[in-house]
Length: 330
Image (spheres, helix red, strand yellow):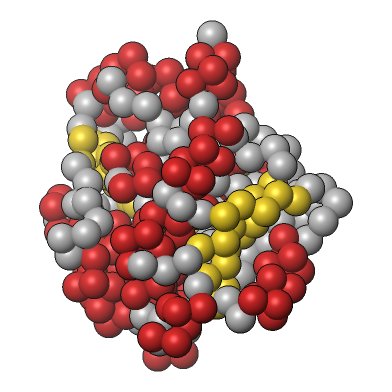
């Protein structure tokens, strides 16, 4: 792990500020759900600390992604809104952009992998998004998206590497700190880094003593490699049940924030994700998708905190096919 001197960076040099998160919170007020914070004595006993779960699986669209998507579309010019937007996503950002576009009267086009979960594909269509499929192992979603933007005059709303997306995602951690107060550790799912970057900015402003830790799947640890190397590391497309975190590199906007403000990045196995899914279903009666369990898996395995510490866990989403959900839990 890089030492704190290496990671320190003046907040003014970062691409997003806490003021941007505050502005996003104003735009989302009364539109995004202020999701509940749940606790469990059984979870506390297993983790050896006090756990506070911020349930973004109960957010509109079933994931935190709605926050960033809505905020990004809300900040477009009138001309950009008339032309529409295009996004690429394996599912949660796709649903979020489609829903946010429908709420704001903006036409949306979504580039999705052919193997995206059917529930996420169906929901994206139901929210009004036009879907264009691609093969995530042989085609570049960025190139397809750029071509569509040029051809149709669309504005690109990427899933994480966008200032207003990062600012919107940061509102989830902001709400958690407002609801709970002091935390010793905040565990955040890590894919492309939008949620982690926004959460780190919120922590720096509101609870600077809180250690912010990113959690990603073992098979897709590009974030961990990048964090330790001090530069963005690209990896082949990973294979994991955490479909929302199968990114191959961090963004040029998210990485500087993560490098400067995040304490560490750890990984968890697919089996640990299944165990966390089962815990949520059996003990807390909530449905959480594998990616949404990243932070919880780290907390329940006691990887990132000391006994008795107060630990915030961002449950990032709950969108999963029921057949796949049953298969994994079985």
